[in-house]
Length: 301
Image (tube, helix red, strand yellow):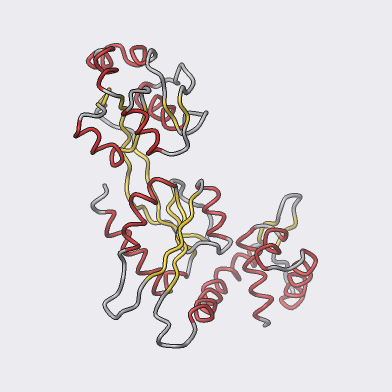
């Protein structure tokens, strides 16, 4: 069986679209379509169901991808690194949410090296769970840190750690409302405080309100900045309240720059998953990074 046809097939399977696969492979869409048809004729079975938006693999298509993809990934690894023993560096492509990946994962991986002199070259990118998981399936990333557990047989997810969310504000806001009033009055005492968030939809505040107060925020965001570290800086400056991961605001809490407005018995949690394509953990550099992140995460929880 032609390896080029298999490579095209696996790329289409991962991308879920002939058009996206063509862009990844540097081919025209008709060329990709022709190669898939050739492979289907050779096998005597359809590999994809054509739909208005993309393609869906058939049962035989999923089975072939599960068997072929790890071997093609291994061949690609050999091609990229070469057979020269002096080629000791391996490049890991990591993707995940901006702040967690920057603050937690990147420092672990940049320090990662083996005693035999082989080192890890890192390329990190950031995006939403949907974007990064799609990139992983398409082969653009080796590992993804995601707040969403992927479905399907192509990707495997390992729980990494839980992130606790804390409702914080500068001390003057706690003094103004009387932080003890939050407990008997609930959310109403917080409505006079401006809201700082990463998006107009108030994703963190809305999740906290739903989990703790069983309600929705009554006000829109006063300050919206797409970086949780900037949200923390605005909270320290007194711009309003924010919901932040505890790991990100622990130092500010200890210094008294912000204070927790509420300490629920069961704080809202968000789980992070470490996701890889099936078969790629057989690659030494991916396996090393995967293990290092899991070990480091035992101190993050």
